[in-house]
Image (tube, rainbow, N blue to C red; front, side, top):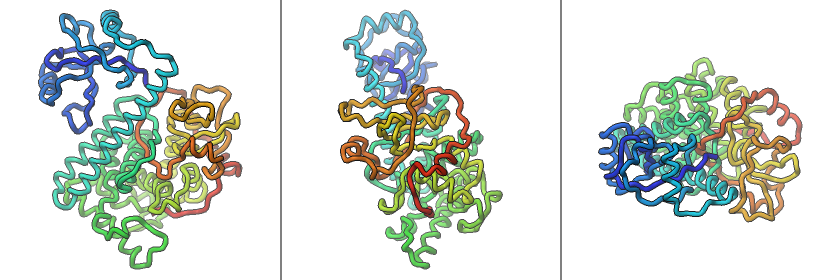
Length: 460
């Protein structure tokens, strides 16, 4: 979790060069690469004033002390509303904050809960904004392709700025979400694909292709009847053939939007498989682009966790185990290895039993220590809304003993942990940790028989 920096409310007409501002806006509602930055020139001040805001949040601890000379301040907002990792404040800024603090100090537990909630709320707000943007894109694709392209670029650039603004990024499980399943799937695939692409050190052009291709990989389903937009094992031969046509429709739409050739190839190849048994062309992994290999794998994973019928869903751990043990030939080996490193043996959303016998829900995973995720622990003595997450990276003795299916939980544990019926993921800034090597961790887990059981499934 990020440390919390107290934020001051500053009249936009009193902004000065050297102040570190936080614009509490969606990334598509302002012209800056990031929504938090130190003002470098007068032009940026004028741009902020042009946004129509009366006040903005200023992080004094990250600002130049000289920027506050002879500038009256508006009293402080609640510190819990902004999270940002910072260095120790300058002496003058620290003195100023102490003078203007209106709230009594918080207990360590209260501060930790506020930090925890602020981080989750930030991820959920960004997910909600991206979901709304995806729905707009979906509505514009066929009648206003250029406008759809502009919105798509804004979403992908926002994601890229988010993962570029921090050294380490964790994958965060969000609260149960409702709404458009197409948006949820598109965003899940985009978020995880971009993190996987960064982990595999793809260049900026390939990262952009991954983002655009992942966001719009299923856009061709708009040309299908509603009942055929989610794959079903019960499809007739004709229905299966019609469903598979969404790939060609998607390429055509991407071309009309002016999408790059690399992004169009992601759409064209997102149902190909490394063993040559995919469609529409039966390509092998040697014929697929690096960006397409990534999106194909992540798309398969999310289709296992979030299929059209919730009854067919498997848990995140089951999905990873199936992909590694039974579906392995379908995926590029390097991509699969990097994916396991990224998601951890127990991906977000997995129900686990800890080494001290307690039950927990995995809520976030840092790729640097995939066997040490952040978990919510079932503790009937602590109200659920006051439960502090347990960061296993900081635990020497406690670890994960095994994964299990939610049906194995008691009624009380099931209500407390509330395992998600549909998984939704987003970015969360991760704490720096030591490097972890995948090694044989998943092999041991899958082969031990101590985890969940699952049957072979095909992803659509």
